[in-house]
Amino acid sequence: MLDTNIKSQLKVYFEKIVSPIVLVASLDEGDSSKQMLELLNEVAEQSDKITVKTDGKATHTPSFTVSKLDQEARITFAGLPMGHEMTSFILAILQASGYPAKVEQEIIDRIIKLDSKLNFQTFISLSCHNCPDVVQALNLMAALNPNVTHEMVDGALYQELVDQFQIMAVPTVILNGEVFGQGRMSVEEIVAKLDTASPKEEAAKLSAKDPYDVLVIGGGPAGSAAAIYAARKGIRTGIVAERFGGQVMDTMGIENFISVKETEGPKLVQALEQHVKSYEVDIMNLQRANALRKTANGLEVELANGAVLKSKSVILSTGARWREMNVPGEQEYRGKGVAYCPHCDGPLFKGKRVAVIGGGNSGVEAAIDLAGIVSHVTLIEFDSKLRADAVLQKKMASLPNVTVIMSALTKEVLGAGGKVNGLRYQDRTNNSEHTLELEGIFVQIGLLPNTDWLKGTLDLSKHGEVIVDTKGETSLPGVFAAGDCTTVPYKQIIIAMGEGAKASLGAFDYLIRSSVTEPEEALAA
Image (cartoon, rainbow, N blue to C red; front, side, top):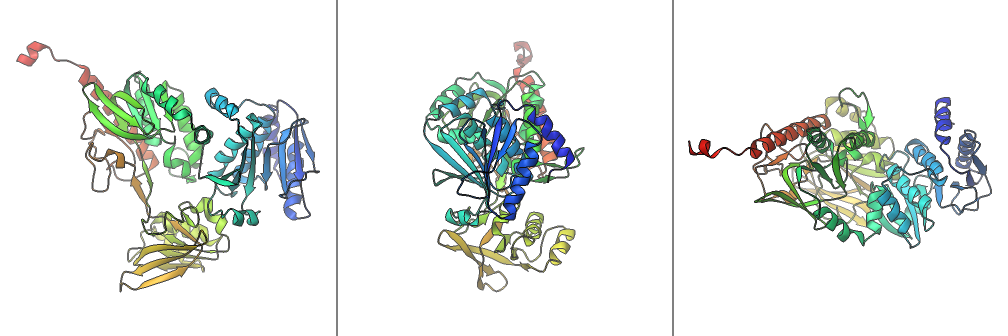
């Protein structure tokens, strides 16, 4: 099951095992159980500190637990941890053995202090690139705190559990039998959600920080580049990010980042974060900006938790988010049939009927990907023609289970029993209305800039983008902007990085010029 190269890598990783580990499997007579046992045995062969037992009594089979040899198991894998989850499995072995976690000590201390019983389940699909972050975060928490247990559940393998909890999107986290959250979550985000007493303390700490020379709002490619360029100038630099990495964290394949033939969003974000951390940049993650103000002493940024940060200059790089349909039923059935990531959530709709909203590259690519999983795809396009590249249209046209409906306006998401069961649309050529019976809707209609909080503060375009000049400066002196939140065309990672660097250089130039006071004689002249 594991090739020679992977086995060699495992031998190296397993040299870090601190205490002996036991993998206890609960198996049945099915093929999945046979594959699981084969995987566990091959993994155990790579280290004399790993033992496999097959006397597990778990309710869910096949599954296995990971624990120290003399400790009650708190980490469970209900499914075969292959693909993206193989890393989760290896990390679970190391962390359960006592190998130090690469997490800030403050977060570890907060995990250890959690004193209530927390039983987590994370529903995943093996093709989901967002799921491993959640699985690894909760496994780490279980390894550190005896009050925490975590079970990874492969939704494709446990359909009865998927139906029980009405799982329509991954990752979905269940805590003590109730839905705790959906989508990518870091360990910091999970702990912050559990530790409700910390926001006030955090706000006080943030407000007490000294003023910055450059404060970057947003931690995506543009913000990372801006922070690096500012820090390299030797000036006091801070970066506020609601989620470091931004939308790139939700991007699977990246093949147009020059000099890197192919990578994935999470890998690129990890590299960006490591690069930023190599400089003296004050990173304030999981913080959302609420307001920007010009004061007599410079600029202030108010955060959602009430904290106020001060800076001589600000660079806005808040990026963009998926555009929503804004029709009745969309929010009600979000995560219950309405989805925005076909790669992540597609496997949950195996054999079902779905619709894709949008005829651009993203929409057509989604239809192509989903066609290999679901029974039928209906692509709905508002315009009278598709906007996707010709090669994508040709590929989609060759698929027998894809139907395209042009000139269609989506009117309503329909559902019953907590799940999507249909979609109502209007034919724009004759205003007639029609209903599609389906189980899933994937929305792929572009992006909206994250600039709502800036309305009335500086100049925005009619599309809500921050208007910038050739140096990235906005209409508010001392405030610069870069990336997908601006009027700069072509929303691409590499362009955002360049714009971030440019805005940072512009801000540095502004700081130099604004710090120079003209002599009184020159002013008089």
